[in-house]
Length: 360
Image (cartoon, rainbow, N blue to C red; front, side, top):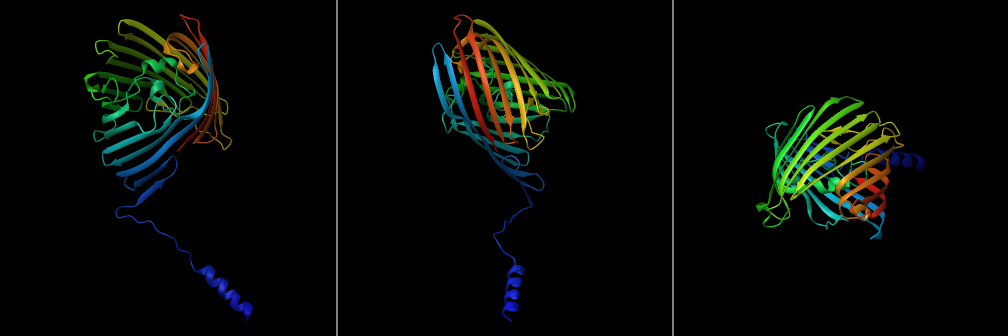
């Protein structure tokens, strides 16, 4: 009898469902996506909100005739918020910490976008990346080398407040805008920049890609009477697991004429192809749970900012070799070695950098 009562009690306990809190919506059905950040979107796609970010921890050992330093710190720590209502969207990306001269708390991206004219013409207002350069347009999460080239650091204007019109088609993109030339100061609107970029992909299939691009920026220099003009040429391609890219810059920096280039070559040992979309490269996606391995080399020469190897800005040359391991779509481990010298002084320097990256 006791066994019968015990069996009935256990069966009743199993039959009674366990209740937890429920999620309800005052509007239409919601779609929640955790594949890369966390996003909530209405079933119609008319409204959405997304949160994501990145954390990059670096150890770097830099030596030159004037520098001997070892650092272990957050290269980048950012959190990003995105939202959309109809044809309007926004992005706010903030630095929590950054080792490259940035202070925590400042905004990287802070803009509003209107997309009601279609993909061929979108209007972006606010702080954003100026449309110039292949390596500069590629996210720091996705660039092959752990640091951008010394020549890109000099010629690409990066982010500034402004107004941009951009668009894209099946094999082309463009962007053109007017920006503050010097950043976020109260009088920066007096110093303006006109910047534009166009790309074309004549060949694009599953295993082969050919990319060409042209960029131009005309802006006030540090002294408003010194105009800066920079022309940038881009070429890139993927051929199965092999990928390559190069850029050449020709500039008038006030009274001086400068030029520089870099050429980068990479190979994904595990067989994946480097992703590409809308005029820029994306992060390598492993095809198995064993991850993906990539090796690369980059050569550069000309007027650049060689601070990564403890040198100055000027005429120089630099070589970078490295290896990346992509454990999954969120985790990347990287090791690079950079070596170079300044042409006028023959001062040389090098750097070893190790990175652990988490993107969500």
